[in-house]
Each structure stands twice: as structure tokens, then as C-alpha cells.
Image 1 (cartoon, helix red, strand yellow):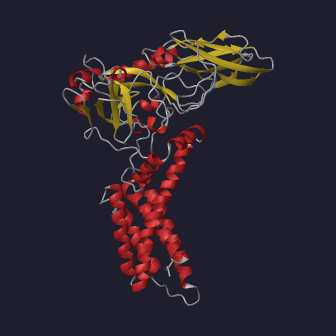
Image 2 (cartoon, rainbow, N blue to C red):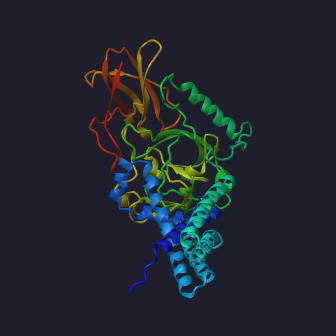
Image 3 (spheres, rainbow, N blue to C red):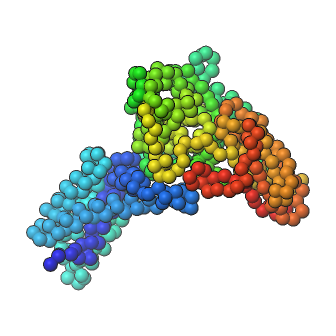
Length: 499
């Protein structure tokens, strides 16, 4: 007959699993040394492409919460399993210390094998050991049920430990949400600093921004505004001292460059806009920044690509990978700065790549390797059913409709067409029967930059406002709507505006 664990044992094991996860968090923080992180990576990679696509389109950013919750549950369950074994041994031999010790060893071994961080794994093993031993120890209480009293005390203790772990990490964690350190090194000419040059570009962008009353971002997005999408919840921890980029594969010579060597190369500042392939047609995963870095082409010339397919696979520290034609890669940019500061962790610190005119998800963060290929291979998202690297679709966003002091209605937003640029934005207030040109912001320097647009009209009831863009090659934004999967959302944006 199978000896199933009692409800009491399962309850104590669950508490042990919870405190073990909290202990791992206390030891490692929200990093890849945290037990949940590698489990989350596995969950993300094991999820079928159709489910990923459905989640991106229908759930959006909240999808991260679902897979991270599942990962927390798996981690808790694994550590609870080690506690069940310890409780079983303690009951059989009537030795709580032995049972607790065994569960601790198992919890440490499991955590260390998953995270590859044996020292940090002690953070998970300690609480599991203690809770298992407590769960296996009789508690004298003649007037009450001993098991219930022990469970109550253990529950309170476990919750107190979880709260303490969270509070401890918040007090001790480094806060990099505001971005990195200011880029203040002197330029090659010696007369200005990087900060001075970026400040000049910021002023130019401000001067070219339109006077829009509604909730429309300026021409440069702040760190807080700039959208962020990753394949997993936990970002890599890479310091400039530990980072290097290797160009390998079908090359004449392998090339490896360190961060110091990269930043000693000729430095440029570029306005570059990124748009997420998974966003809705009128979504807000479209932003622009001033990026500081160096062109990638000189490094490719040193490597001397030899592959027959003329393509390369870009690989990141977090396991992400994207294939590009070398021709597109030659126009790319290795960025280590954003809006005058070093890259924030969430945007690829210390170095990411920017490829003009391609969807944001292909601009690899935490870049560590460029492998020149002999034949084409599918990238991360292509393996999940998406259609490759780009180019981006033309779009005019309708993000705001407000009544101005004059009584007119102002509609406004941004328009973007990658390297094709934006020539015009047209607005209809009668459901696409007639069209008028919108006012456009002056173009910013660069080949891959958005523009603001605005249009005012006299209201006389309800209006079906439609907006469309014409790119720099004279092509009209397609009218027919399509979902984001598999090639990015298309269509004219329509909104009912009441005057």
C-alpha cells in the first residue's frame, strides 16, 4: 500500500517550499541566481509558439505575470518535494533533525543544480531545513491539538520570513531603474563631453516637437516611457568589465572586442526609433531615444565574412538569438548609451545592437556574439511562427483627442515607417471619405526616426476620425487591418471622436 503524505505534512512542506523560494530571493535578489529565474527561462522556451503569439496579442505585458507565477509555483513545488522526503524520514525514524537535515541537503542540491550557484543555494536550503524540522517535531500542548498549534506557529513564522526576505532585498538591492551613470567622457576633439553633445540633441528634439495638448510623448522618450519587452522576466547581470563581443563562424579571422576597446572607437549619437512587432495597431510600444555607440561595419570588415548565405546570427547573454542579412547588419550600431546615460539594465546593459528599419525585437540586447553563417537558420521568434526580422510596417498612431481653448478638437500622435521615413500624414474626420494633411514635426537627424503629427477641426457632433501615413518613398500605409502575428499589425487607425 502506498503511504501518502498526510494533509499536515503537505501543509508543512508547502510552507517549507515558500520559505525556500523566499530564502533564495533573499540570497540572490531578482537575478539569474534566484531559483525562479532558470525555471522561468525553461517555461518561456517550452511554451509552444502559437500560445506565445496568442498571449502577446491578447494578454500583452500581463502575460509575463502568468508565466512568472507558474515559475514561482514550480519552484515552490520542487522545494516542497524535498521537505516531503525529509518529513517522511523524520516520521519513520522519529528523528526530526535527521529529516530536516536531509531535506536541506536535497533542497541545496536541487537549487545549486538549477541555478549553478552553490553558495547562493544555501539561501533556499536553510529555510527548508528549519521548516521541515519544525514540522516533524511534536509540540506539547495538552489543552489543544498539537499538530494544529504547530501548524499555526509555523505558518506565522513562514509568512514573517517571506516578508523579511522581500524587505531585506528591497533595502539592499541596487536600483538601476533610472538608468546608468551619465556618459561624461570627452569627445575626440576635446572641446565637448558626450553629455554636452547629447544635451544639444535633446534641445533640438524639444524645439522640433509640436505644441500638442493631449497625452502624446515628445520626440525623445524617457527611460520610464520607453517600452520594454524581453523573452524572460530576469535580465542578465553583465558589467562592462566582464563583457566582450566575439565575431566568429564563417570569417577570415575571429574578432573579440572588450567594452573598453569598443568605447575607444569613433563615437556617434543617433536618434533611433523602435517599434514592437507584437503590439496592437494603435498600441504604445513605439518609442525613440538618442543612442550613443559606434558603427558595427568596421568590426565586420576586420572579421572578413566568408559564409555563402550572407547572413549572421546575433546571440545575447540571455539566450536570445536573431538572424540578419549581413547587408542589414553593416548599417547597424553597437550602442552603450541611451539619452546621455549608460544603457539601463532592462535595455541591454552594457551593449546592445540597433539595426535600422527593423522591428524592435530584433535589436538584440546584452549582445555577446555575432556568428557568421554558411546557411540560413531560424531565429528565436521565427522558431515560434513569426516572420523574421523586418522591415517594420508603416503606421500612423492616433494617441490623443482633446478640445483646445479655441473650441476646436485636436487629434495627434506619432507616425513611423523605419528607414523609409514619413512624408505626410493624412486625417479624415468623416470616415475616410475626404482627407486633409496633418501638421508634421520637423524631421530629426537620422534614417530611422518617427515624427509627430497633429490636426485640428471644428466639431459638429460625432466624427469617425481615420489616420494614415505616406512614407518617404511615396507608399500609402495599407488600409486592410491585420493582427500583429505573424508580421506585425497593419491598417488604418480609426477612432470615434465626439465634439
